[in-house]
Every structure is written in C-alpha cells, then in structure tokens.
Amino acid sequence: MIQGQKFPIQQQIIKTTEEKDAEEFRTRSGYLPQECFKSLETSLLESGTVATGRAVHFAADLVCSGGLAVFLQLLWHFAIRHIGIASPRIFVYLKKRMDELDQLCKKYAEDDLISMQEFQTRITELVFVVRDCPRRGRIVPPKVGQETHREGYLQTAASAPETLVVRKVYRPGTDMPPLHKVGCEFVKAISDAAIEKALFWILWTLDEDSRYRKVHGSGLSGADRGPPGTKGKTKHDVFFYFVDLCAECYKDYASRQMIRMHEEFQCLLNLIRSNDAYLGVRHRKDLLFLCCQILCEVPRWKVPAAPALIKDPVVMSRAIQQSANFFHEVLANPKVSLYGKSKQLFKSGKVSENAKLKINKSDKMINQFEAMEQAMNAYLNQ
Image (cartoon, rainbow, N blue to C red; front, side, top):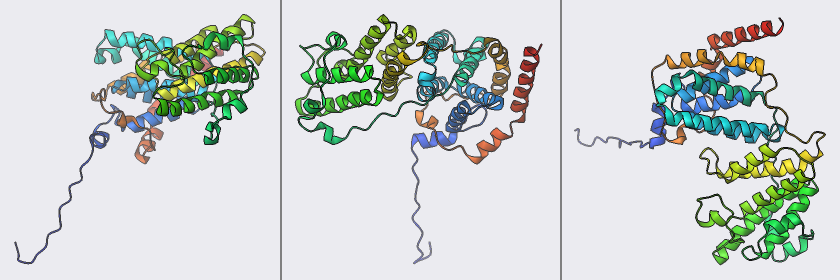
C-alpha cells in the first residue's frame, strides 16, 4: 500500500429475497413473473382475436410455471372489478370450475397435471368465458366523512321505519341499538334503489364499529354471524350483519317475484362467507357491494334474471380445441416452477420494452389464431 493513498469505501448493496427472486426467476417462456401477470391482465381487457391468443398464451405460461393460484386469483379479481352485475352468472361458473381444478390438483402431481388435456382445456375455457362476458366496472363506494361520527349524528340522520327484514336479522340481546337504526336505513335505501346511500351505511357502520371497539374493547355486535370456524373479532364482525340483511332482502323480493337470481345470489353470499384463499378482504367487501347493487337494480329490469353466460357454445368449443397448441409451445421450454415463491414476484407493474417487443413480434401465435378465426368463419358459413 502506498503511504497516504486513500481507497474508497466499498459499499455492499444488500437486496431482499423478493428483489433477488424478481431478478433470477423467469417463466417457462422467459418473462419476468410480474410481466407475465400484467400482460395476461391487459390481454383479458383487450378485444379481438389476437388479444384472445395472447391471453391464452400468458395463462398457459403462468400456470405451467407454477402460478396456478395466482392465475385463479386474477380471474376472481377480474370478474369482480370488470364484469360484476353485467353477468352475475360468471361467479357461479368460476366457483364450479375452480372447485374442479382443486380436485385435479389434489389428485395429480404438478408435472402430470399441466400435461393433461383436460387441465389445458379447463384453463383455456376459463380465459375464453371471462373474456366473452359483458363488462361493467365495480361501483365506487362513497366517502364517509369524519363529521358523520360526531355525537348525535345517527339520531339526527336516521328516520326509516322498522321492517320485517330488520326484525329477522337484528338481535336485541347481542346487537347494540345503533345497529337497529342503521339496519332500517340500509333496507330503506335498498328499497329506494339508492345504492350510494346503502353503501354509505355499510361503510359508516364499519368505521363506527372500529371506533367503538377501540374505546370499549368490543364492537357493536356480539352475535356470531361470521363464517364457520372463524375466531376472534371476525366471528362478531358487523360486516356480516349486512350480509344477513342482503340475504333477507333477497328472500323478500323473491317471494314477490321481483327477482330471479337464486343461484347467482346464493353463490355471492357463499363466497363472502367462505374461507376461499383466492378471495381477500377487499374482494369480499366488493362482493357485498355487488349484492347491494343487484338488489337495487335487478328488480327494475324488464327480465329480472341473469343473462346466459355463453352466447355461442359451438364457436367457443371449436376455439377451445386450439388450447393444446399453446400449452405444447410453452411446455417445450425448460421446466421452471414459481410455486411457493413470494407473491412479490407477481405484483403488477409496467411491462418492460423488451417484453412488449416479444409480445408484438409473436407472429407464430398471431398467425395461429388468425387461422383459427378463418376456420370458425368457414364452419359457420357452411
């Protein structure tokens, strides 16, 4: 060492496990996991035959790389956020198909599963059906101001009369008196088709319950309305008070022939009350909002029933037959598995320019779907 010479301090950059995973892991087709996830979500939103091909390609790549759970979670998220009341039948369909996939996952190993024609057909069908549904964005809930929680606000704002629905759900022994007033206001808002007001009372009660719990150590309800097996405060969550109110409102409307969505509405209630790992707290809240929207809007439809889910089964079944080509193309690449890795890998973000270039230049996939479209047109014009 030369006397007087100074060396810069070497700085070591310590990266988290998630950051290392994001750099090291790729899907079977070579995409970063978050790029594959985001591209699939974008393709589901786009229209056209080529976009359908891209959606199937990214879905096949994702599930063949160990991302089946992430794929299924994306479908729930997409149905809740982008389909909703436009096609309530989609939730019955998704629940049935996902239960079938869960049974297949329990029966077969991952390598055997992704090579099965039945599995490949199910995944492709999910993509086609979700893309084919009419779109309607989720309802944006109103904001609840802090001034609405001042003392005496509820007594001033609440004036709705008691109904049979509220009497069936409200439990005087375990529910606090404010829940009775709120229940009456909520049911009146539903009957008046005032969706924003109905959602306001849900959010107001959730906020008030949280404030009350901080002061008194317990919430506004001690009734056990939570899903089976739940413990702690979830067991007595006032959120399920409104779930029960929606259930009773539907029974009332159905008895008067005002609505005919028995299977669809019951499916939504079951999803809210379930412990489905693919649904988060926010998804369950959005599903409750969807129940409120159905109760407000559907009784005023000319035909108060859910429209058919699949418009043309013949065209769809012929298109799904192409699923094996997409999976064979993905499975020809070296095996990888993102199963069990951090969900940080799949956090959606901007798609890199390299990924966009790779997507746009995928002529083989585009030509494949254009040929399929021509075949379908020829078949239908016979």
